[in-house]
Image (cartoon, rainbow, N blue to C red; front, side, top):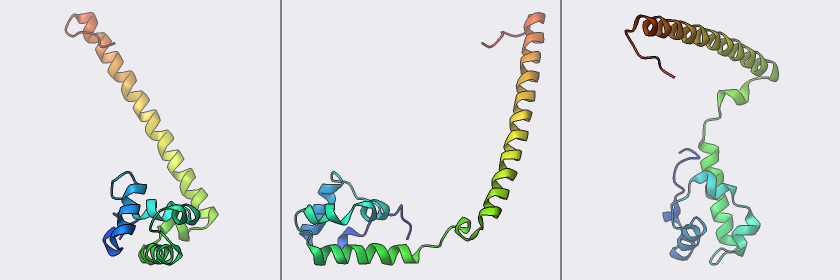
Length: 122
């Protein structure tokens, strides 16, 4: 299960389900959305007491434990910076190629326009 998956609301009693759906304006929240609501807020809502909140938090914790961490979480700061610089260099090279292609396209458009073959794009 992923954080973007629907939260398993069906595992709760009807009053809690209704409270959860009301909190999210009638739509089915994701695991991340439910996990992001502070405990103090949940406890202010109808049908949500300490025991039900503990069950909700236990369920979100179980789901989070099942998630595979991103490979980025295992990288050192130095590795992340090296990867960033590599990607930034690739980005700069691609931007340069894109500029060159645009310049060639404009030159071709201008030549065609001067020959009366095409219409110049603005």
